Picture (tube, rainbow, N blue to C red):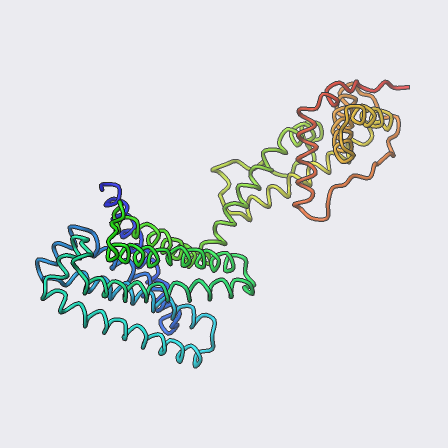
Length: 400
């Protein structure tokens, strides 16, 4: 029970924080009905969840007897209508969206009228008290009221799932597409809530009492589904930021992986280094900053590699290639190891003051036509430069 209570409170708080967060977007675009729909959906679900928290529910019941259940379900159903409005205003022309939202509003109002019409006599007859005890066998009016509620929820979640999945297929932005698909999955999971509730209540009326709590089992798919819906609605805005963070991490990882090769080459030819290397925490955390430093590192490696050509040897490269083939390496790995061995051999030859036996030899290297391809290639060379047995065992060339 403590876990359920804690999860209920935590989720309510998260949604209410999202309400405040999305209000900023609402202020920026106050005439956008889609933004109003999304904010209202978040607010309705967050407040509906908060009312369901046991101490809150009991406190409201003491102030206005029998009010919290009705208000909670008005808000939750209203959240579904607002979510439909968000989609319709996002994907349809304004006049078409107006018409479709009005039709769904009629469905919502009909559902609320039906719930209220049953709710009042249920409270007056004591039927509702049995519902609060989850004694469905003695709460026929409340059971009907619940069925109307879950039927509306199931209809809304199904339409949201269908619209989200349909429009995700033609979305031109990757994070919008992912967000729509996440909303579709969340809405589909939420339909398990009405399915379970109808099945449970029907089983009770048929004389069977399932050995689990109806509320606890119904609560989890609704909570999980709406959480995914909320996350999906935020992905188009948060997704690009997440991509930027991921790209920064990948750039930093590549920058560090190139360090052994870069250090060896720049120590040999310090004139190719135009500025100090990037230092974590000193040179900022913007993606563009780190991309620049990574680009500089690639250029400096190739500049130093060009300066090293006078010390490299065709014979030693071919010897490394033969050793790599004999070790069973794939063709592209043979090229990587041969390049790393040629660099290591050239650096050792430079230290010994020996020129290469074929200074004009410039092998065709894979590399790439963009920064990502160049970095990927050089990362493999750097790894072989630091770890390959073939590279370490390639002897310094002898001058003739």
